[in-house]
Amino acid sequence: MDSPTQNTSMQRLQNVEKRIVKVLEVAGGVMDELANPTGPRKEFINNHCREFMKMIKDIQVTLRDEIKSACEYRPFENCDYGSKISNEICCKKLEYVLSQLDAMKQNIDEYQATI
Image 1 (cartoon, one colour):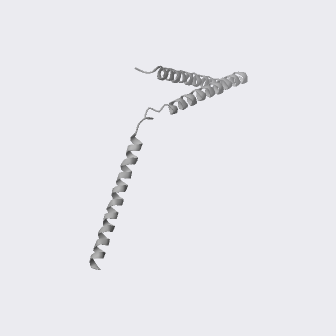
Image 2: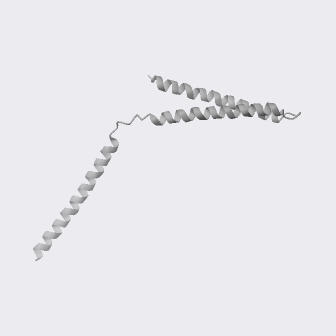
Image 3: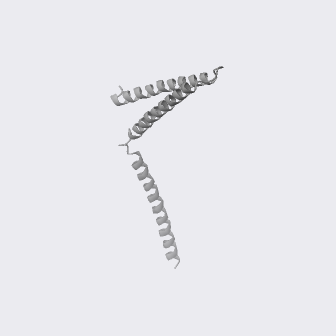
């Protein structure tokens, strides 16, 4: 079952989709007006362009808020994967250092045996 926050977020995104459709309709209306054989009506074009820009700004703000909200949601916040991997890397480094120390000890023992 979805949480109420996810549900409202989905509803907001669905509303954005509807507004995008409306923006495209407004843009189509402007294109129709520009193609008018008698010439475009300046006031009509200006009003629709203002409406288009306002709707784009509202969509942008809503999407920005949704993205920000999604970035704040951290389902793996309590995951210890990073620390586990870091520990495994440290263990491998220690194993390597120990093998190098063993090799050095063996070289020292061989050197002392030859003296």
